[in-house]
Image (cartoon, rainbow, N blue to C red; front, side, top):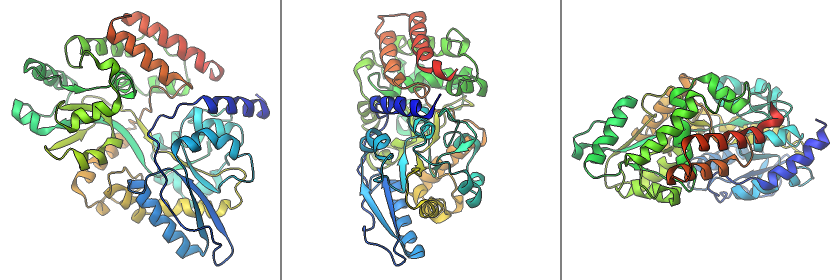
Amino acid sequence: MARNIRRTKALTMMAALTATGIALSGCSGGSGDEGGDGETLKLWHYEGADSAMGKAWAESIKIFEEETGAKVEFEEKSFEQIQKTASQVLDTDAAPDLMEFNKGNATAGFLASTGLIADISDAVAEYGWDEKLAPSLQTTAKYSDDGVMGGETWFGVPNYGEFVGVYYNENAFAEAGLAIPTTYEEFVDVLDAFVAKGITPLAEAGAEYPLGQLWYQLALLEGDRGFVDDYQLYKEPVDWEGPEITSATETLKEYVDKGYIASDVSSVKAEDAGVSFINGTSPIFVSGSWWFGRFVAEATDFDWTMTAFPGADLSLGSSGNLWVVPENAANKELAYEFIDITMRPEIQAIIGNNGGLPVAADTADITDEKSAALIETFNGVLDADGLSFYPDWPAPGFYDVIVQELQGLITGSQDVKTTNTNLGEQYDEGTSEYR
């Protein structure tokens, strides 16, 4: 496909993208005044000032200015601002030198395929960032000429990660005389035990992402790395009547029928599900590490823990968002110096001690006990090459398809076979150009 054709398509697709995360206000950084050597790094990111990454990158700005003599001009942006306008701004002289951008084929992949962000492979080799990143983290940073992740060319660098696991209310388990499950069979037994006590065990949300992520995790229970590569990287056609997807859809329907999930889940949003765990209504919540910091701050009336999904070798998750360098950046070398600072142990420790998941931290630097346990769990997923990305990633707009089809399943308006057929047709249509 010619580059100008890809560019036109990317502009169209980027405009249609729905943000998959919460919009966060950017933290304030250095001034726009020139440094001692007359250089300025123009930086965009959208992490909140009180977030783990926001704190880490604020410290990185201080170190960068002290060590280089250059200044950082940080512009406050939101997730949506960067997501919706990047493809237009990056093609002009207004492009920043460095920015945070969402990983995945429909986002960073599109920018890579149109030449709007730079090939940074030489910088990765020079600074040794590849030696600090596990293989599954590298997947989201490297893209093919067509913008498919898992390619050979580096277009970004992540310095934090994320994964989906299971949060447990330990007090509720103790009151019910139950132990935290370590196998899937034990997990189901726990669900049955809570239902028998009149408690709906799983906090869930069918109007937004949590239910779709649970569905994909159930597929991963039956799948292997080959299934993930087919689904996410288009290695081979996905069998929508195969054991992985069939089991996932059937099991999700059973969860509703057996009372593991509330009957009105189709109208529940992610925020409501999280709050039901925070206030102790639901003793179990299958969701991401991005809730961890909030639960530390707000779920204070009981003890809780988080583990990987019991019995699963594969877990939803990925690197965090990427540092990308626009092709039109005026100061690429300064951008590489800043990225390298964010990969230092002392910066990685700030991420880890504030509820984030660093990718290159010295575990001895993590002094917060709860954070250390979270990072240990995440590192276990990485060591097993278990990160398997997210169900909506393969095609733009597939997030809405998953939400709609699973709502139809759990409300009983369509059966398992119809749900899988509809999902498969939309998936095939959205990924046809890659296969």
